Image 1: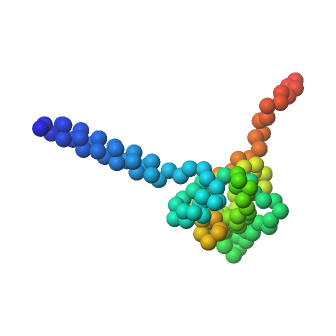
Image 2: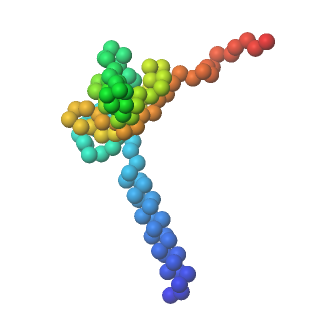
Image 3: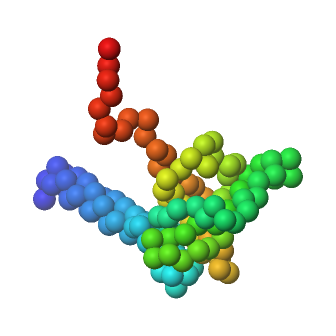
Amino acid sequence: MKKIYIIALVLIAIAVGVILTSLNSTATYSNFKEAESQPNKEFHIVGKRDTTEKEIYNPLQNPDRFEFYLIDQLGEKRKVVLHKSKPQDFEKSEQIVVIGKMNNGVFEADDILMKCPSKYNNTPQNVQ
């Protein structure tokens, strides 16, 4: 067998390995119930913040800890601990995606994505 064929086979095997690894590590949007059933797996939870609960952020004590409550798409409310500083304009967010794992009934988030109200809306405005 020629060296070029061996190199091609090795490259194909590496490409297949990379694709399979990336497919296993991708997380899907989920809910708290599913995240609780698999505590060692990372999940993306979509929801809205619960404005009736108190948010806790004390940057002098720990700037990388922000606690709030999130209601997922099934209506289940859970405490979320974000291991980052409180995001700017958090109160203005319409929808939140937290990325992390469930730990003893609390969702430990490593990252957060927020959908804020758009400054561009569908209603036409009078431009003069």
